[in-house]
Structures are given as structure tokens and as C-alpha cells.
Amino acid sequence: MDFSSLLLGLLDNLIRGLSLGSVYAIIALGYTMVYGIAKMLNFAHGDVIMVGAYVCFFAISTYGLPPVIGILLSMVVCTALGIVIERLAYKPLRQAPSLAVLITAIGVSYFLQNAAQLLWTSSPKVFPSVVPKGNLTLFDGQLSISYLTIVTIVVCVIIMLVLTFFTNSTKMGKAMRACSEDKGAAQLMGIDVNATISITFAIGSALAAVAGVLLCSAYPSLTPTTGSMPGIKAFTAAVFGGIGSIPGALLGGLLLGIIEIFAGSYISTQLSNAIVFGVLIIVLLVKPAGLLGKKIREKV
Amino acid sequence: MSRLERKSETKMVPVPSHSIVPERDVNKAPILECSHLGIDFGGLTAVNDFNLTVGRTEIAGLIGPNGAGKTTVFNLLTKVYQPTRGTILVDGKDTHGMNTVQVNRAGIARTFQNIRLFDKLSVEDNVKIGLHNQIKYPMWSGIFRLPGYWKKEKLAHESAMELLHIFGMEDLANHRAGSLPYGAQRRLEIVRALASNPSLLLLDEPAAGMNPSETADLMENILKIRDTFHIAIMLIEHDMSLVMGICEGICVLNFGEIIAKGTPSEIQNNPKVIEAYLGSQKKEG
Image 1 (tube, each protein chain N blue to C red):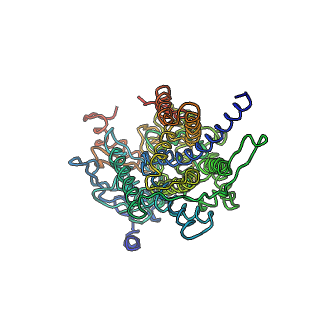
Image 2 (spheres, helix red, strand yellow; image 1 turned 30 degrees about the vertical axis):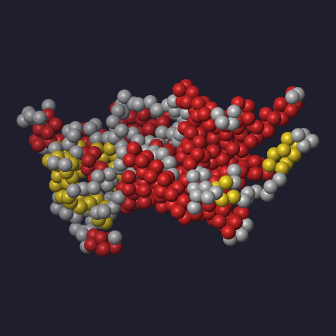
Image 3 (cartoon, rainbow over the protein chains, first blue to last red; image 1 turned 90 degrees about the vertical axis):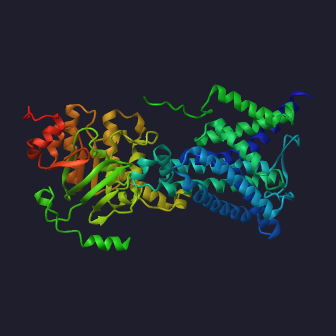
């Protein structure tokens, strides 16, 4: 193996890692935003991804709708699902200890998985790619990048830009940041905290739908447990980058994707998950608040 | 909701006899009327039989020894706590069953004893949080940056700068709120509260930790706010120079009950008040 093919191999892995990482980042945004504002870990988030993928699957395969309509439809359904989950399961527990909310979230996660199994059976569905199959070839055909990979990375970049603008420069985004700092004071300034939390769940769930569609386009076997592993990985990514931080979710997601692909290619496919979580442990030992997380100093 | 409004309309005038409303406000409907207001925490009665009327443009003081229940009164008015007993009328409207957000929209804004700014947001954004309910545009207009968004955000920026100008803080607009010096943070809290367009502004120990010259500036600013916005201001304060200097009506709380109400000179000479503060029968020293 000569030097240039080694370099091309690296580049190929890097791009695949970025693409996988983009999906993790989009999912991680949902975890991190909800954590930032509601101070809870929504472990049902991964299963919202699965629901989104199923909606898109049925829209495209069963009803023959165009992929764009399928994606929009799954975003709408997931947004509604996210708001309903928050209203029914989490809102009554607003004053409850965080452990109760955490266990409820795990309950919601199992509920969604089992409901999906009842409705759609556990036999895997073959997900049709929403992006036309094909490759972009570079360097005289030595490097080929699939359109899906490009679309995934571009979608992630667009989502990050829009979300950063939204939270920094619109009044709803500012209300969200205010709520994440001090809900009581925000309320006394006339901000409806419940509505703000609902909107956060809505945005996170809409993003989960996008992530679900992109994920299943890359790994086309769709089952009721499809969302759980990417959900946990994305949660890891959010913690990795510093939970509560939007740029942190992006950084964590991308790094996680790249580490996973590199570990799989150069070390061992079987060990790739172990390596990913091993790196997480090391990072948290060195930086307990995550890469971009802020250290919380208790005032005395 | 509508039933409550109708009920309260009949209650608006006349001003009750326990009022300490300044003369210019007597013929106007009061901004705040509390009657028999009280709250129990378990078996402990924190505030009991609190009756107070505040005039349209009055500056009212709420004083009393530590733990007398002053901040609890503010928390009742802003519905941080729901009262156990009694009624609160804001601008003639019964606030029974309202939550914090609704009371804010009804016209009450406040500051906090321990500063509670949004530290990570800029000074301007803190003020814009106060403007939240006045600047309205749909969420998608913000996401897609439609013309409506730019227009409203420009309006928000202008209003925020105008409010900051009152305290001469427009130069600090882009600083992080958490990085401001203490006095500026206190001023910003007042600006943020003003931004929500209140008709009654509650200030919880606005002069706490200020030196005499800062306190003098603050007094001037409070008067300026009242005269610019024509609103009522109610303040909790331990600094007697401020209270006696600008308050028109003063209400003294001790152990959750009102022990005296009156003008500054009446309060200064009230033996009950002196006893509550000094704990003895001695004449003022």
C-alpha cells in the first residue's frame, strides 16, 4: 500500500465518519436542548427517531409519496409526538425529583418500542433511501462519496446554522436561553415556561425525524429498536461535547462518528463501540463537564 | 375569566378607608388593592390580614425587620406563592387563579433581593426578555428571517436601547449581564422589569449593597421612572434615607402583620414601629 492510497483511505474514512457523526449530532441536539431547558434526560428521544423513520417508510413505500413529502410528514408526526409525550409524561412531573422524570423517560422509551412492535411487528422493514443512489467520484475514481453522505453532512450544517441563529437572535430562542438559566425569573418577566419547554420538545423531535430518515437511508433495516442504539450514542455525544451546549452537541456528534468509523476500519469492527465509549470515559475523566461544557461553580 | 372581570368591575371605586394613597391619586382607581391577604406555610402564618391600597402613581414603601414577611408579600403579589386567604386586585382585576405569567401581563413586574439576571445573555437581550410579550412575531418568521422578523427585532432593539438610556447604560448593551459590576446589575434588573411594561413596579431592596452616592442616584432614578412612565412603584428597603426620602405611603410589617401605615413622618414617630425596630420602649435616639 503506497502513501497516496493510504491518504485516500484516511479521507474516505473521515468523510464517512463526518456523515455518521452528523446524524449523531442532529440527534444529540434534541438531547442537549431538552436538557438545557427542562434539565431532564429524555431517554425516549431515540425512539422518536424510530417513529419518524417508520412514518417516512410508510409514506414512501406504502403510499408511494415522494421522499420530500415523506420527510415533512414524519417531521410533523414527530413534532406532535414530542409535544404529546412532554404534556402527558413529563409536565405532571415538573416539580418531581429528577430521578422520577428519568425513570418516566425510560418508561416512555419502552412504551414507544413496544407500541411500534404491536403496530408494525418486529420484522425488519427495508427502508428506501430518500436520496438518489449514486456516487460522486474524485481523484480518477479512487475516492467515491455517496450522495447520501454529502446530503447528510449538508443537512447537519444547515440545521446547526439555523438553530444557532434561532437561539441567539430570535425572541423565542432568547426565551429558551432565559428559561435555561432561571425559570422563575423568566416567568416573572412574562415568559410562559411551559410553552417554551413544549417548543423545545417540538424542535428536538422534528430534528429526530430528520435524523431517523437519514440514519435509515444509510442503514436500511428498520425495526422497533432501531432508535435505541443511535439514541444512546447521541446521548453519549451530547455528554462528550458538554450537555446543554449546542456547539458541544455538534462537536461531540462529529467526533463520536469519526472515532467510530476509524476504530472500525483500523482496529476492529467488533470493538468499535467499546472504543467509542472508552474514549468517552477518558474524556470525562479529564473534563468532567464535557469538551465544551462549563464548570459549575457553587457560590458560597 | 370573564366572570371574574365583571365581578371586579363593581369593586373598583371607591377607595377603601385603609388607604394611604397620595392626594393626586385619590380620585383615580387604585392600581393595587389587597384585602385580608394571607398565606400559611404548613402551620406557620407568614403573612396575615394584609390590607393595602396603592395609588396609580404612588411610590409606596414596605418596611419591617428581617423575616417580617416583606418579600413574601411580593411573592404573593406576583403569584410565586398562591395566597391562602384574601384577594388581590390589580388595576381592579381580581388575580385569583392567575399564574405568574398572567399577573405579569396584568401589569406587575419586579426585581429580586438577590439579583436574578440572565447572566449568560447580553445586557440588551436581558431587556428584550422583558419585552417578550410586546414584540410579537410568529416563530417561523424568525426561523426564515422574513421581513416581519427584521421589523419587530429592530423595534425591540430600539425599545431596549431607549430603556437602557434612562439609566445611561446603552454603552453596556453588548456586555454579558453576568460581567457587569454589582450596581449596574441592580440597575439592569430594574430596566428589565420596566421593559415588560408594568403599571406597578415592585423593587425588592433596590439599594442593597449600594454606597450613599449610588443610593442618591437610585432615588433620583426611581422618581424619574415614576414621572416618565406614570406608574406606581412599591419598594422593600432597609435604607431609611431612601424610604423616607421618596416614599409617599409606608407600610410597616412585623411578624407577617401590618403594624403601621402612613406618611413617612407618621411612621417615624409611631411608637409601635420604633419598638419593632429597636425592641424597647425607648424614645427615638
